[in-house]
Length: 85
Image 1 (cartoon, helix red, strand yellow):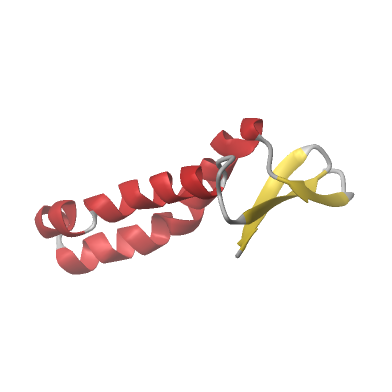
Image 2 (cartoon, rainbow, N blue to C red):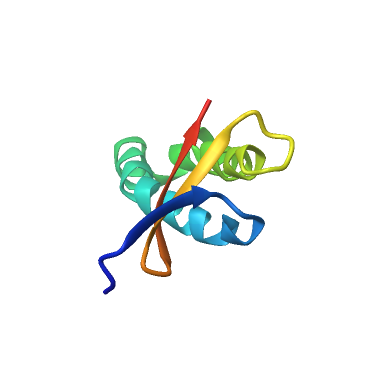
């Protein structure tokens, strides 16, 4: 893999990749919550949290956002992102 890194502002076409990164980062967290709470309770207690994360990322990457979102690329692949307020 190319070891060249770059940082740039988010672009509309980046959003799907950012969701993939967000989902991968929080997958173990939500898995742990489900294990602690049990599937039946977790479906009620945290289902909205997963959806809200999705919506929040969409919102902060939107054109009217008060956040500055940047992506980190290794070569041509987006590997991370951050939002500044």
